[in-house]
Image (tube, rainbow, N blue to C red; front, side, top):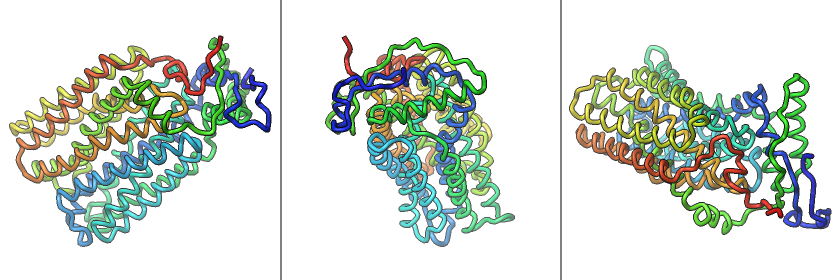
Length: 493
């Protein structure tokens, strides 16, 4: 059995909402062993985080060049504002494109949002004034925000349940591969011996546009989510996709485990009304909403406040030349990438509640300690970089788990919009305020003021860890439909 109509009303003259299907497709996807199909899918889609890491790192690494640019003449406060504008675009893009992703499908949107990103980041390279730069950064952020919703939901719906935590964390960790790429690119292009000057930072932003075009070609083979297709009255296409995936296993002699889950009964729908969306998010699942909002707000402030102004701390307090910033970003990026990669498996084995709460709390404690050492001028620039590497080894896993939490703990019909809503709320509260606040604190050239900012970030992470420990969902090794019952599921018996 795959998917077939149960209701006698399921004829061509009836509306989609009249049709009830019994399907085993979600269980068939969850039982599959990990193969090359999953690896290629994750690589083609998960590379979005690489683009975000590239953009964020470039914004920090080229900050010195932006301040000396004859066209832009940016101040430290302007650098912080540019970071906030990028985040604002990501917030609004996530909300708008998240709504469209649930309505129009995952596949259409991850092409639309990537196209927007490529165009906007290319235009950033041709900025002629502060305001044009801010506009293009806003549009770049909108593309990335939309990517988060479309990509997270797609990957969640294809990945077998027992791998979901590790896969999601590792993918989010590739943000730091992009960060390293951005840092390396800035080292070469900002060096006066190579390019330098106003042309150097412009070419840096061209890196993202070129990568985006390559990624667009890589995604051409990625199918639509069968889970989305079933809900939206396209069971034949959903069945075809799953059968093609299983055919890949049989052709290679890979054994597929037997079915153990009962089929689902789902009522097809054209879309989910916004009233039902908000009832589900903030009434039915209000405890999960509180957890998701807290986790995303804390990590957004923690990351965006520190990383968007990372270069300013190095230049203003440690006198690091702007063209050398990339050398300090590389080890920082390494620590961030290794955290999810090495700790990710524990989120499936030990469990979500313990691992998420512990990584959040530990990140906050370590930041408070290193902030105090920074304020006391105990750390030199190398020691400060090592301290950040250790802190963000744990913080990167924590931040990645926040996206995992909101992606897997809400029903299929509103998954993309749920990701968008909590990403928007969390990032809006933490990500916009953070860079702007830290930009002003660093502008004061007072270490005590910067330390206060670090303490705020540390406190938010510790509070989020406590909230997760008390109210978090133990979603490890469970199907998405078991973690969050679909809104369209029909009760049996």
